[in-house]
Length: 104
Image (cartoon, rainbow, N blue to C red; front, side, top):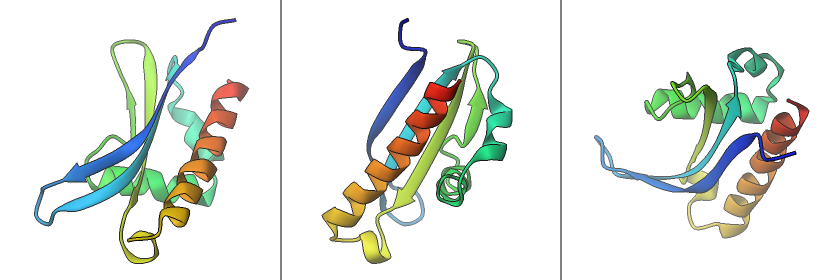
């Protein structure tokens, strides 16, 4: 069985009104999976809302037949200058997102 999803993690930078750095996780699942948002944890819901708020995706169903979910955590407050906190967010968010992908 081949990989049925696209997965990306990384850092993003925005130069909109105020320059900002953020942590970013994105996954693309085959087919129209927009309803799977109903089962998201509070962590994923918050990160999804952060992406929507900045117009960086959220949930989109694209022409390639995949549904893309974008999750974002601004590097502010407790995250600013705290690599352990950032790594913890990447690990926790990635584990949840990959578990959803594996269940589909």
